[in-house]
Image (tube, rainbow over all chains, first blue to last red; front, top):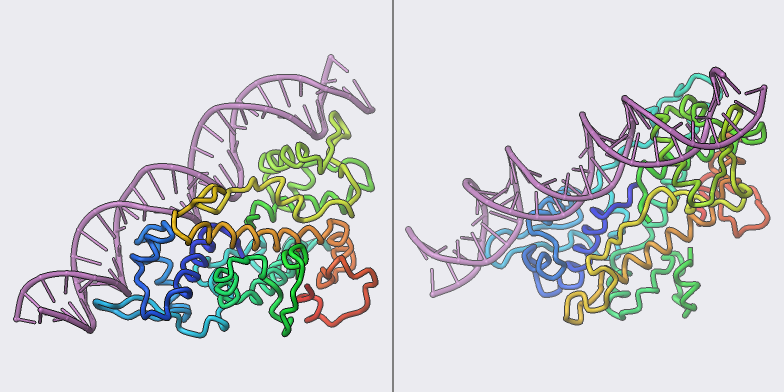
Length: 162
Length: 162
DNA sequence: GGCTAAACCCAGTAAAATAGTCAGGTTTGA
DNA sequence: TCAAACCTGACTATTTTACTGGGTTTAGCC
């Protein structure tokens, strides 16, 4: 799990798409104009998003992209993983005898569990929740999906609420 | 808040340092050897860590680095922020009238709050907890710091426990 | 059938970040 | 005094990022 501007671009574009797909397919040219992302870069990103099964394309005039699943079934983690092919940060390549001594795989264990934790968090932030936040212009409501009842919480609690 | 291999190197090095500083200053040469990170790269990283007030250096023979504060007072977020100077991912530079229309600052609001959330989480993972995890070789115990009493939890709960 | 709008594909590329290397310093304990 | 260690800055190779430009294919529409 890396967190780079590339993933941010992809999430931004997907959010734009989700906000508009009720009017039929959304063109990359439109996303490019609205979000100030170059068209060809979007083509690269959406190629990966399509191969990952997150979006579907309609070719020809009037075509564009639509979400392949419901916005609730797409998480931020899904999007980032789709465009940001992972580099294993453990210089051991996942093997067990990294350094020979008892020091073995210190970074391996450490990062896999940290990664898992962050990934797990971003898996709980759905595209639908981003759409809601954007629609109400109350972006602090990125709250935990496990809370079935969205009781009104303070701003500080919402932001750190995990 | 970016999450790259650079920050991972820094956290790994700091963990190595925290595990050994009870025997006096730890040399970069030692960290370099144990963690397979080039010495000069470590010098760059520790220059930033020192200027951020996370470590202190002892010069001369027998010198090296020690933690500037208690391991409990240093978080993973501190380390990553120290070495990974932030790039603002909002193409508006933080201003309010990004795109003129009502679409303004969509990415800005989105990413600042997401960043805050992740940062907040990593702020709660202290270097001391990583040391404990490493010492017991039970790295799944990266649990939420807010839980005062570390009741025994299942592995799945520990990993996703936020 | 032609026009056109859109996805799709691919090769290249400039700028930035990453992950170093190298060559020298300076400081200070033994 | 000397050598171990930090410190500094410049330089470099590789990778990633973000983009450009050119084409091909598909399909709605007049």
